[in-house]
Length: 453
Image 1 (tube, rainbow, N blue to C red):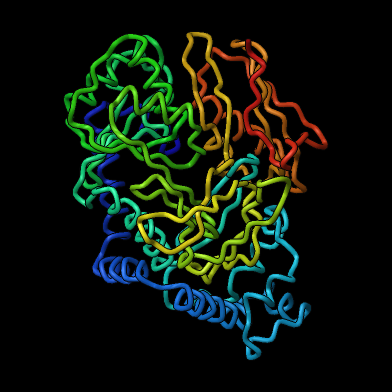
Image 2: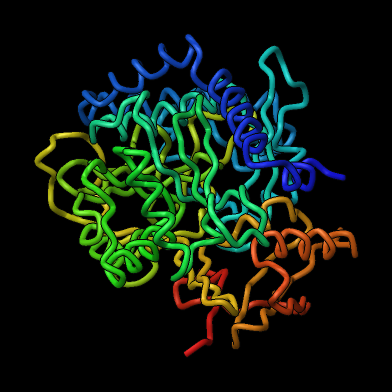
């Protein structure tokens, strides 16, 4: 019996204990004395002017290139092949001529990208799936993780969110067994000060329990996927539910916040919604300020906006914070439109008008439950090149898969197991193998395609 199956058989009180234990371990790793120093440095960089920021970017870029030139077999050969001269200077201009790395290219070279030797600092395993449904597993250092979280907390501090602020979290974690039909549909992470709500049990009948718990817990801050929060907001307005007046701020991440989602969430809860964009690969970060402007965090990575059509640009990034998995001109697969206006907040960084990334439809279960953000199904499916979830009727879902070279029947079994955890047993699941999955006009692959009326 694996850990998740064992967890699902525990009583709720024990599940809360397990969730809090995991939260304690993460808090101890991420937020030690080193984090406090890191956070102060990250906050201080807000005052850098344009010239200082450019010097800082060149410095971080050179440090990473010097490290990987000797440590990484992939970059040792790559930098020689493309004749990058670290002593010449103007590194930003030099790397702008290099090919753009695609996710599949990186997947095939993961071991060569990592340094030959681990060094003194321990490595932390990371994984991501993104919009393609194609898993990527890699490593980062503790200091890399802390700098990422320090940047995210800088953004949260802009909005009055402190380290001790309690949060109602609506994400993709599988916390509650799919066959559970009665509340509680949430678990507590006490050290992390989170009430963690299941996204997989929210429907027309259960919404009242979610709202009642939010009101009872008196959390001042809600964070989660826009697809889940807008769904809850819709039930609040339809059923005239009262979420209380304790909530002061709502933040979103992991998906693009669409304008209609923002409107319905703000109407239901009566507070502002702010969004953040980032990814586990740490090659780009965009944060919304108190004036509603989306700022590129220029001190976090070197972000390029590669033209697609009109005012639409693809996000390509070069990371600063994770030298043990350095990504140079990495294609995130996400797109933005740009804003020419300046922001009255005075913070540095280019302004993004909107983020067009990770936009997905809902999957609708037979009982009416709508589930969004299903990329968690694919997080460990590293032998899948691409995947797409297609739904034509509520009772049946087809998962289209482009197999990788090392794909085996065990990968299909894992895929179906992870799908069942989130979709339950009332839906017929079919895996269909294809050679290619059609892309959108901007070259993106939609993870979920719903053909329901």
